[in-house]
Length: 215
Image 1 (tube, rainbow, N blue to C red):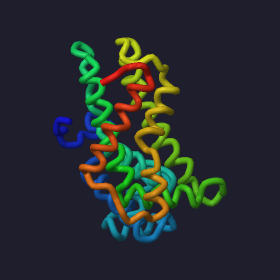
Image 2 (cartoon, one colour; image 1 turned 45 degrees about the vertical axis):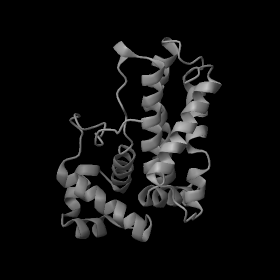
Image 3 (cartoon, rainbow, N blue to C red; image 1 turned 60 degrees about the vertical axis):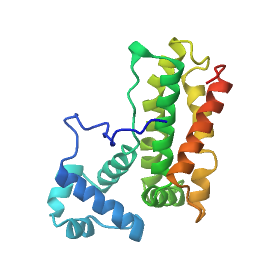
Image 4 (cartoon, rainbow, N blue to C red; image 1 turned 90 degrees about the vertical axis):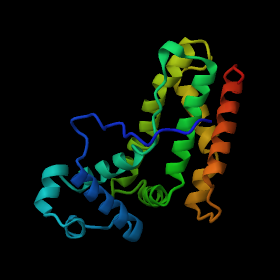
């Protein structure tokens, strides 16, 4: 697979894109969550980030707003390669899916995402924290939203014969497989970048085979 360009966050051209200063704040939140869990306070974020609590409330509204912005920023590190409609072929479609799968696995198996997902799972189903909902909405649900247009292009071009939601479920299962659960349960044998590329290639090949196409 060809080497990909540096990560370009999806919101980089949006008016809502976080400034460099905001990204420093979000990095502080991620660091605190890795170190302490999600029991941090707005005051602790303000101290570590050398800003005022008033600034945090003005930017994010409340603690849930800060958590949401943080999870969205982490999720945005998954690269969304552009697919050229004018030159769409099985090869370019396959390479686009491989690039996305490789980036997705890289982010998911990183220390920050592992910490976030462990916390989300631990709080899911209780009323003490909104983190589970926030991670669900800005993790799997957001990935689905980002991938559906790619699958639609593949379907319209006759490259796959499976519709959007079903295509996403198949792709999710093949790409993520047991990588995330192993990471969450503390498997110390973290995949290397070469492992991840091989996993991604195998997942995409299986996906295209199941959808009626062959590489």
